[in-house]
Amino acid sequence: MSNPSRVLRAPYGFWALLLVLLLTGCGERIHKQQSYVFGTLVEITIYGEEEDKARRVTDQVLRDFDEMHQTLHAWQPGSLERLNGLIALATPQAPIRIALPPGLISTLTDAARLSEQGEHLFNPAIGNLVRLWGFHSDTFEPRLPDPKEIARLVKANPRMSDFKITGVMLEAGNPAMRLDLGGYAKGYALDLAAAYLKSQGVNNALINIGGNIMALGKKGSQAWKVGIQHPRRAGALAMLELHDGEAIGTSGDYQRFFEVNGKRYCHLIDPRSGWPADQTQAVTVIAHGPHAGTLSDVSSKPLFIAGPGDWRRMAKKMGIGEVLFIAADGGVSATRAMNGRLIWEKPAPAVKVVEAP
Image 1 (cartoon, rainbow, N blue to C red):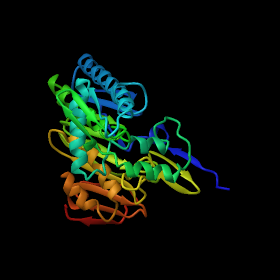
Image 2 (tube, rainbow, N blue to C red):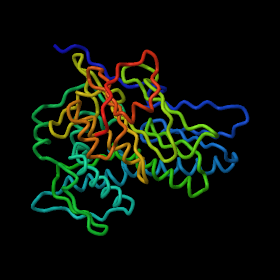
Image 3 (tube, rainbow, N blue to C red):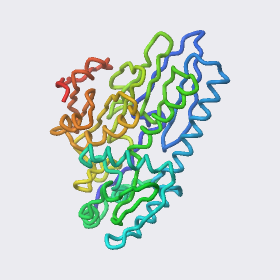
Image 4 (cartoon, rainbow, N blue to C red):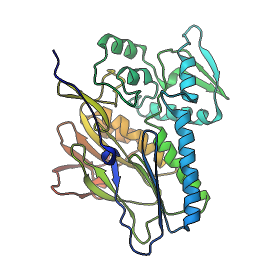
């Protein structure tokens, strides 16, 4: 008889992988709105704009997020779910051809490129494995899947390279492929929101989607300050300043997970084995450049799955130089560039500082 199992999730205030700490001084014009999208808490903070303008642009960002959520949701009705239903009817001998909604074309193409770059450790095609483990649900149960079914899906080897897009048409022939863009959508949303805010003349803002955060400009004379969540207790592990155009993302085993017989099973599935990755507690990365939001969201996944022995090589492949890595045993490593930016909360951990990969 197995021991009692537990489904564990972070409580509402602890849900975000990163906690944004904003200190508002007297006389500062700060507009802040919150919503619940992408299955997590979303917060938009705008500095230095008139209230009417700040509310108008924030309302539009949240509407855009909600529309994207409906389009890209992995298991509720929407464009992606309809696409997955059609792919399931395909066979290698009779591949299916599907006309894609315009919004999905660039998204799937870019996700496929990043999957290839990350040696398929970031693999949005393994939605059937994620569903098998019970994570395609808001109320998942603590249970272990049938190992034979896991092995069957791993052998089917679904990858983003299993489809081809020509114009607006997608062709796919592997029915084991089920697309799940949960490791991509939040970062992509950050990039779109940042571009929209800039187009409206908003140059100082902080966009936080469940701990995936992008900074625009400053908060007055100060840089935006964010905290990195401690993976094993409430509160921050460290603080840092996030500068204009930078995005920070974390993958952790503490956001969506369950326990069976005292062992933790998180939602981050290793496509090579079909089982949840279990060598890492958390990985935090900082990304720069025109698609920093997307890169910050995606790149933390292959580093997390690669584990203590291979995360530095994977960081190099993903073009990430600022990394905080916490192994399953609690050991903390950081690249020199990242360590130089961190202000540790007490008690500060012993940190192994490594050179950028």
